[in-house]
Image 1 (cartoon, rainbow over the protein chains, first blue to last red):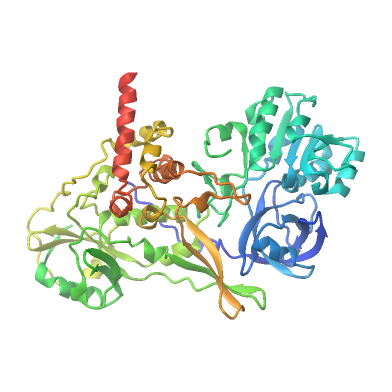
Image 2 (image 1 turned 120 degrees about the vertical axis):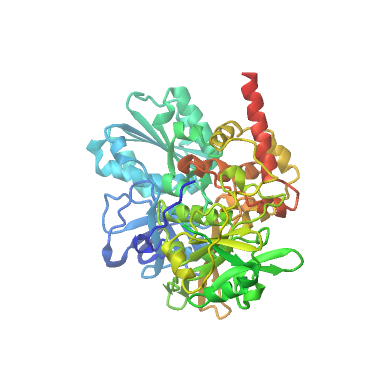
Length: 283
Length: 339
């Protein structure tokens, strides 16, 4: 039996102390979601990768993880998209520019942008899953020549819940972006596609030798999107999925986000289909 | 290293001697049949011959309630509570409980090393004592004998009329300085016999768990489980925690506190949308046991269960971790025989 070495605390960090960061802008996305632009002390960069997340502190309500919505290519601040669902997000929705929140992170593996370089990116976002995927999309837009095609499939429950409408108009106008949208249930004014997100997939023409899919959405979506992509012939290892778990620490200690033997907060949240196959508790 | 002889009638003097430099924590009798690790006030309250304490010494380094920060709601600011080493002598620790501490040392040193735990862990001196296994101990099956001195500074071997005292480190030698004892003349006793066993050689355990994921054992055992989480709360190697903010009555100040949590509770695996990724008790039972024998063990090569018997002894539904593992071993052996 080995004796485990006890590390000198001088070499350990304060894992749980947030930095007080300033909210510089708040924008309504829908009546349920807001977008916050946040600046760290002394204007320091967050230094995140697309797909990474931060823990936001609201003293009294606690802490919760939020994916970073902005691309690291856009310097000076970062953005979080927040849906009002509980006490912490209720409190966040009352914040105005000039107020401060606690930030820890960035945490998680994020997307491996080096591995994605040169590939056709197929982004599949369901509902609020567009918030984290927007980081990846804007990264690819800002470094457009580093990537092949940029195909975005976005599904929402209804047209009233569609996010980032102004930005998505620009994607529509950009000849180098293929932007497909569907809603489960359209209003009378809706003239676009209706149907769940998987209905967008069969009609795509993909070069399977160079396509990588990046998927984020509600838990129920992953299994069906994976099936649809597999029947297009896309290998499991080319399908990257960003999972969501409740987290208390973000640093691989509290155990809440553990799926079988992996900690989503440190080894995830992005896993490829092959990795997820051995994780029975994942989907 | 020569062992010294500590006669039973000098144990109180020995405890008094240990108290000279540092506070001493040791087992005390509590209630009708329980024992707890507590600070020694009266040396003759110390009990060195005990089966196991209710909680292990984990509670000193990873307290059940641990403030991570104090916040001020008026100023929207916070301060960090002072992190102090638990500078004390732990007397009468059993081998499996120190092995559990060494596993926690690993958890809090690897990956993102955690200052909160590591700072508290400095300065402790461990004086172990051998024990007589009862019907729940099975640490022998996970490689931890009753006289395993790994990690200890001083170890007391139970012998006729008292203890054979071994100093194992410099800190241990310093601790015994000034307390004269005659040389112990006999041979040090071997590990005592265990009544309870996991029937598999240690190296093969990982294979058993590679095989047992879809076993019927999980739903069988979960049929009795009430999901109370006691097994996690008294486990010396469980280290999962919850974090919550507590606001005081003035609504001006509060603390962010972490507290022991349990993967057997339903809410543990719940995510923001309300979905629970380990919905039934069989899934949760399996997760608990895999955390003890498989997941981290794949990484470190050793079981994360130290064989203390606490979860079995305290289970409100009579579920035995030894029984679970032995049923898996059985299934594994049968499947091998069938090949």
